[in-house]
Image (cartoon, rainbow, N blue to C red; front, side, top):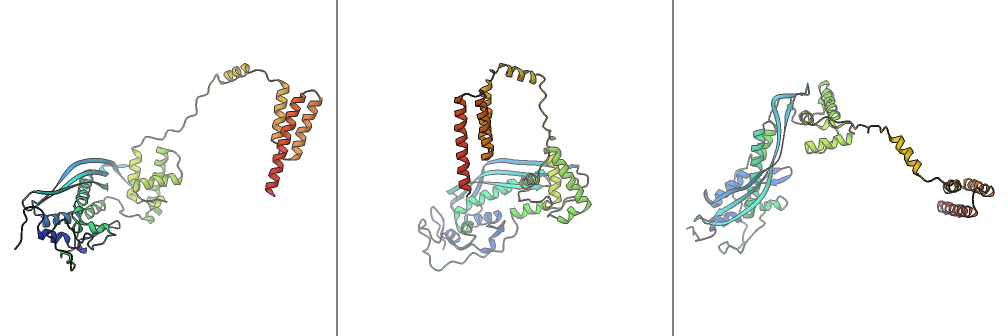
Length: 371
């Protein structure tokens, strides 16, 4: 006979929750093991009953929306009435579970985002993104209920129990022989399968996967030429690295060659570019008609340079820029001649001699380091 407690989970509920996860329920998406949202809802109803649980959307926010016209691959022009869309939503959701008497046992809240990429319908894009966000948030809340709701999958995708036992429920039998997983038919379909089906639905003149051979055809070469022409018209001259970085950001995967793009992606990229303003070439600053006059005016205001000071400065430059002993000696010979001719004072000549000694010392240090 089933014993129904006044509050809390029943023995049968705990028995279901403590069993290992059936591998038939596990799906894989992008290398990650997960449960489908409909399967999680099925198990919430199995454990808590049709009215024993509920989910509540606390917030739903549109994070990103991009809509662009469909582009004809032959003409490079938008097709009237046809669009593509990418949409991202963020949702905050609460999951509430109740006991068999309808009293709330616990609740959990979590946040998730959902995206719908490159959809042929704006409405479908919003619908898929919202459903994906809600499904992810529900699964994140439900995982607090243990292995049957995917907790063990966080242990490297395994299905072996990770809770094993809990002392928080005195009516749970102590672990003995491992309980078998509940038999279930293999899970087929779900939110990821639905989105993948929508993304790969047939579209006019589109290729679902990269087709390098297409770019070797006349039509492919023409479309690629249109792509580079539009890029130049909208952003000016760009190198391969800059173009590939833009392609990678647009497609969400690493692109190292334009031929890695699908025809569909190129057409969508062109359509998005056409919405941008044309590239404005940098214009040279207008010539200043009074520039020469102002320079002359500034020069006129400078104090007159003493010829002896200018000569010392020129000789110092010659000394300090000497690359070898021959050039240094030539500079000092000129300084000596200037002193003998009375064009340099003894003090100026002394300063030049000191500069020559420093330059010669640096030259010897460099020569020693080279050896």
